[in-house]
Image (cartoon, rainbow, N blue to C red; front, top):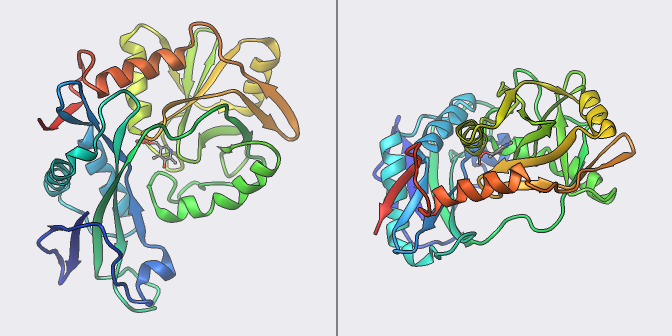
Length: 321
Ligand SMILES: *Cc1c(COP(=O)(O)O)cnc(C)c1O
């Protein structure tokens, strides 16, 4: 694991050490006030044994965008990338080749300072841990559209990968699970009329021949997979629209048959097809169509990630051979 501490107003010399539990004061600020942000990325191995990251510059920038919102000091982007590169190079035997296999990387920063006053800490720890993964979600996924609970209000921390955004979702998600859904689709906190995103995925809706996704905002996470899919879809000549989608429009499209598919996007799943949704007790099915955009985009994106295809966007980043 990669470890770098912040104290006396600066980041200290980082270290890469064996994965192990660590000592933390029970008064550590993160345990009381939740000052913590994270990232999620993957390293891929191609058939020649070279290891690649996918757009890691975007994660380096985003962790600082998240950190700023939580009053956590900025971590130098060059150190983020170089630390990641060195960590993966040491652990490269853990990156298994083959589509679907990867080394999941979890960079995170938290307030390590002891003290229970409710204000921004002066000491932090930046770490990156990793683990080999195959695929994240399996099987069919049905989602419940939120009509009561909210993930992120306007002016809140929804655009940040802030720890607390996730903890607050577990209870409503447990309730949705007890009703037979796997996840919640969040709607805007003010009216619950507009679709925002899922717990750790951005969402795409194919209505007619158009792929629709919500614009990023302060309540929506600016996903790297989301923007890559938008670029890829345009490159492939698909019609895309970045706009707010009303729940009522989605239900109407489902009833009239113009809603062809729904999918989520995120580093963990790349693309997750969604087989159905529920809203206020009513259930709708969205079976996978022939010539699914979701599956086609997933394959194309993974081909770029695994160095199986040309990378016209220069998204791949070589870690080591
Ligand atoms: C991480 C995350 C995503 C997906 O972002 P990627 O950069 O594509 O992995 C979407 N929504 C939320 C809330 C997230 O935390």
